[in-house]
Length: 410
Image (cartoon, rainbow, N blue to C red; front, side, top):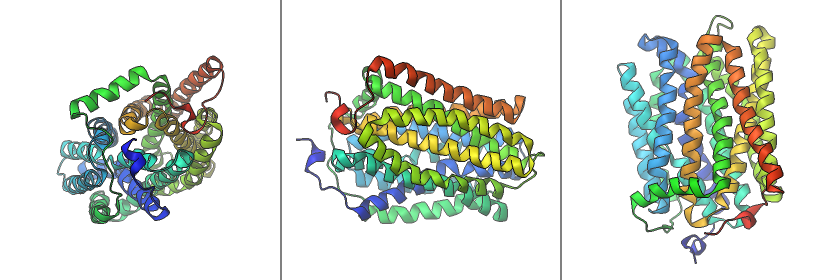
């Protein structure tokens, strides 16, 4: 019997705490998106250079996923999560005191590397609940994660506007360190699923990418959609604070609240994946992301009409990205129960490499072609995912079945 089968299923309170932990942790990856113009002003650097803080955080996150998340299969989860949270808090304090942009970029990469707690929590929880609840629980955790993303931009935009760009880092550090203390007693006690040495765990993630077609497909879906998501959110701050709109960083945070609808959609996507399989959800998400690019293009008009278009387009893109995440993780967690952390490592590393590339490409597109260039980039990336999905479905003959009935051989 697998170690996960001998451990008690977590109750509702535990799942809610884990959802909060996911949200607080992931917020550290996203809140710099709203304050990059303030960083540019405070450190006296061009806005496109300040956007490197966002890219560095995402690259660090991808590196942390690859290097640290596999330890979730090798070490007890509670001490691993507590250690990562403590290191994240210290990294945020270092970022808040950065005297120059290079120092801030380095600190941001370090914060990204250690704030991978959600990617440890999600496969842990998936292994502690029965297969018929896996999609719903994943959706609940993703709801907490989405709430963290939304509130992160609102929080940093508002606090940064009033107290300067360093203040969000200080507040985030205090919240993370407080969460660390609670996690030391609230995270479930688990038994490691693997005794493989660390180098073997790292190699396993790469091997799984080579041997699991469903994993590769899920990685492609999320890498492309998330790249467009990152490009749009990195550049909308430049658009709103630029001459066309002339708004402050707080406006970026308020725009992020529009995406609150995606919090409701994540559990619904999980339930849909449980009942009908994740392929159907992926189809809707890829098509929705293409539509979002078209809606966002109207934001170039400026004024109230442009703001409405930006709000509607960002909401649609948020929903497509987060619901797709739920579907993809429901698919990969059903493949090999004894290797969920390693599966998630491969998947999330690809996703955030896509996100990092999207942020970088988005800034380049905005610099050369303006907001229409960013929208074109989002459309091309989403169309890539949609084309791959349409090519898969006829050849597969059927959509992915729900739950563990799609599982491969362990």
